[in-house]
Image (cartoon, rainbow, N blue to C red; front, side, top):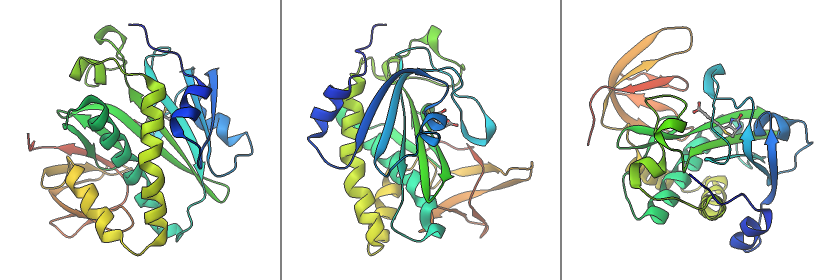
Length: 254
Ligand code: BTN
């Protein structure tokens, strides 16, 4: 499947100016690692055609064949209390789901707490958020034009496989950033977090579901996922507040 190559000028002109400084790199180990060693400034973003050692959450790998996925990392120094930075991945997930819904005219893109984007309960994108220096590096990997044979794991999927549409990754990246920028500005004011929680809840595939949460270290929690708090933590009907872990959806709202 032939994808348009990433283009700094195409992304930058689609963004129509603003906050982000985008660099396109042909190949790198991991955009997370490259940004970390580039003395990043807030708004710096690196995207690449291929990562030889792409990283996922909780020490996992994230593999994608060359030019099939949209892979990028950016650096931010959120202007709000560090305790609330856990909400940032939810904002990024919202932007990814909203942008994909707009571009494909298909409303089935949903956010799985904490860091996945699903289509029909299949993972098509993941986020990795790491603190660095005075801020955070956010990494996003989206299986865009990936075919069945190119998928790294059988339970994953791609936008192409789910919608039949081949997307231009330059347009998609610009759309995600255009969506994310005002959300971050709104979040940083700290004044209307309940609106953001409501918007996230609307896009959530997890809330309302009977879930199993696998905590780091092996402990498991079960219950109905009821809400999200202002730090991005997941509240279960048992009263447990989960800040990190893997969620398995035991019932599907679909
Ligand atoms: C996950 O699903 O566990 C998170 C995947 C995050 C992958 C992205 S791709 C761009 C950035 N660079 C990396 O090495 N990882 C993130």
